[in-house]
Each structure stands twice: as C-alpha cells, then as structure tokens.
Image 1 (spheres, rainbow, N blue to C red):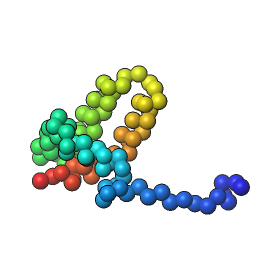
Image 2 (image 1 turned 30 degrees about the vertical axis):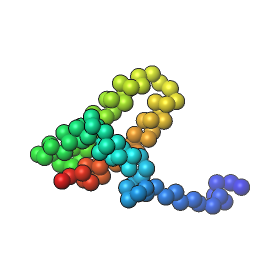
Image 3 (image 1 turned 90 degrees about the vertical axis):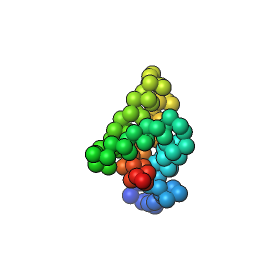
Image 4 (image 1 turned 90 degrees about the horizontal axis):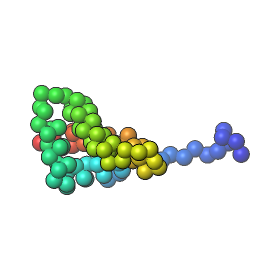
Length: 98
C-alpha cells in the first residue's frame, strides 16, 4: 500500500478544553507551582503589552529555564523541546487574565 492508498487519520489534539495536552499541562504547572505562578503573574502584570507580547515573554523566560536544566544534546532535550514548541502561550495568557 502506498501513501496515497493509506486511510487518512485525524488526530484529536484538544485536551480538557485546551488546544492540546502540552498547553493544558503547562497551564496546570504555571497555576499550581509557586515559582511558576510568580512568573505567570509577572507576565500578566505587563498590562501595557499585548497578549502575544506577554506570551512571548513568558515562553522566553521558561525556555531559558529549560536550557539551563538540560544543557547537553540528548533524547530528553529533544523531546522536551518538541513538547515545549507545541504549547500555545497566548492561550495560557488569555485564560489567566483576571
């Protein structure tokens, strides 16, 4: 069977009302871990910014933390970066604006 003959598969990506599992999980940690929550609140307090700018800032800060945790190329770093890249940071900001 060649690729053209293979049945198409639709992958459901939504998870618990969030765009995907990675976004849901990131929000869970950001709202339930004290130091992560402080970082989220700092991003949200930047009210002069637009949502996407707050989201970019939050992603950048957490990406620095990820890079500090695993500084050598390995399977785990690649897997974490792939999952990290799927997080919808704007969705997290939008859902936490009070």
